[in-house]
Image 1 (cartoon, rainbow, N blue to C red):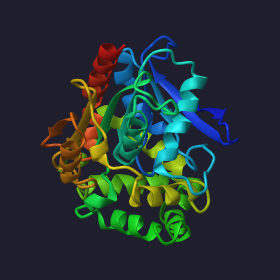
Image 2: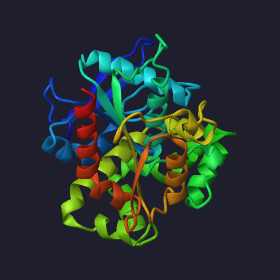
Image 3: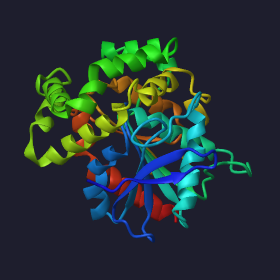
Image 4: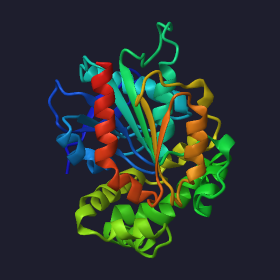
Length: 320
């Protein structure tokens, strides 16, 4: 498993991360933002593709997950400052990209938003630093509604607005105890969910294939690291962040060159409905959408890794 590293942020919090792919300091960098609930271990799914395309991939755990310190009352727009601190720590000298997966999608949008005003001297991630953005299976803003998502997801986003403690208790009861004491039981329950076909036939197929076994392992490690703390404070607050107004609108965002911002989504996605991708693409000026009609949620993520990383690599080459 990849080595977990930490930095101490200006406010004293720890931020956990891992460096994967082509790890040379001089390589183009892409920051990976995991799904929900998840942690930096999820980035291992993209590590082989990153190595093939000469990309240094940096997976980051958000506050309260995977070794990153919990941050009370955090907002979506607080995230770019953490990314900037890590970029400075890594001494990145060339434009980098961000890759948001599922629940990590809004965090990629928040980073892109932080550099929209090129005249703002206080921008955390100006375009001279952040030059490419990819969102894969990304959750849309609450203004889209959560219809079409699994009932459990809708309930979590709704309840978290009223009581993160109750959501955390639910996470702890359903998965947290197993993650701490019986990880094999947690793995079996996740296997059952996908292999039952309840998330679609495409997800069922990839979950059972040996060639994607490393992806399954990465997702399980990501989940365990996210929910193992008693009360799951990180994921429960994350639900509140994702289910509340983001602090900006997608129509404030724009791409200024071909391939700079790309939205990837599976047409059969049962976790995050395809309409979220279509609405997002219609709002983000200049964004490109690449819909794979036959893929679901997990299948889209694991089957598109080379395509996503290659597109990011090309975008960073153009902008450098």
